[in-house]
Image (cartoon, rainbow, N blue to C red; front, side, top):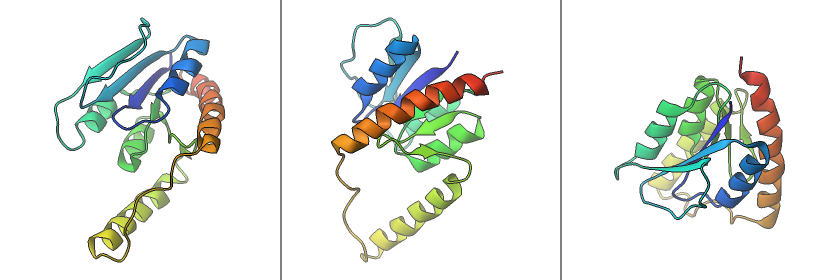
Length: 151
């Protein structure tokens, strides 16, 4: 059965994931560096990992299996999930796909370089209500897609 993993430390759509997962009776695991208050539901669990770069990502990549879904903004984690035949979705509702992940990784590297040399500063665009709505729709679609992935 499909399991949903949330890269939890800065995820703005945890409540939306809980709502969709509840509708389908899916287990959700939130992985992060600090304990978060979560709904009291036997299908929702929390894994707290030690502080450190990529500790949460490494744990999710270790746990995810074919047909599982990961909610993350982290492009390398999205790539690792796809490599294991899992599905990955950004909080703004844009999925990571086999066709898009290479470009996303290259763009990430380019943006990191531009920030390092001071050419570009700033962060991502603010999270909007449209992003939240797009996420809900995309997660619902991805749950149905995940059911086709599981052998």
